[in-house]
Each structure stands twice: as structure tokens, then as C-alpha cells.
Amino acid sequence: MNFTADELRQELAHADATLDEAARHAGRGLEPLLERRLDAHLRSLRVMLGPDGASAAFDAVDAAKRVVESAEPAAPLRMLAMARETLTGLARRRMRAMEPGLAA
Image (cartoon, rainbow, N blue to C red):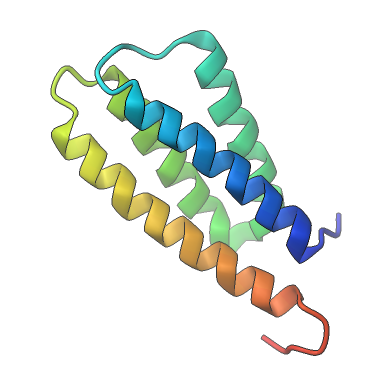
């Protein structure tokens, strides 16, 4: 499937909001609704980012789940922050490559 840079930007924004929610719920346990939303973002981002970005999307979602499940979420929160930076960087490079008139 083909996606536009705007569609990827929008999905990344929604995923970021869900990752923020996971960080706010650190140590409280993973609720089914939050888990479903994280998994849905993972599926979308894996398709949109392709093989190069799939592992970054997985790492971010996995870190978010660890944050909410951990009794001591300090280290998982740092892992989540690093995973989000990596995911955002990959997504931004992909979006630049998708912009009309730009080559990647």
C-alpha cells in the first residue's frame, strides 16, 4: 500500500499520544484498551515504515508496555524515550523521502 507523508505524520502523532498515555500510566499495569491501541499503532507503523522501521516501531511499543507493567518504571521510561527518538527519526526520514520533488 502507498501512504502519503501526511498520513504517516498523522499516524505518528496518534502513536505519540498513546505512548504519552503509557508513560502517564507507568507502573499501573497494562489495561486491555491501551494494549489494543499500542498493537494497532504497531501494525500501522510497520506497514507505513516498511522493514527498516518495523523494528523501531516494535521497540517503542514494547518499551511502552514495559513501562506500564514495571513496578519500578524509571529504566523502562528511559528505554521508551530512546525508542521514541529512534522511531521519530526514522519516520521523519521516511516522510522527507515521500515529499514531492525530494529524493531519498
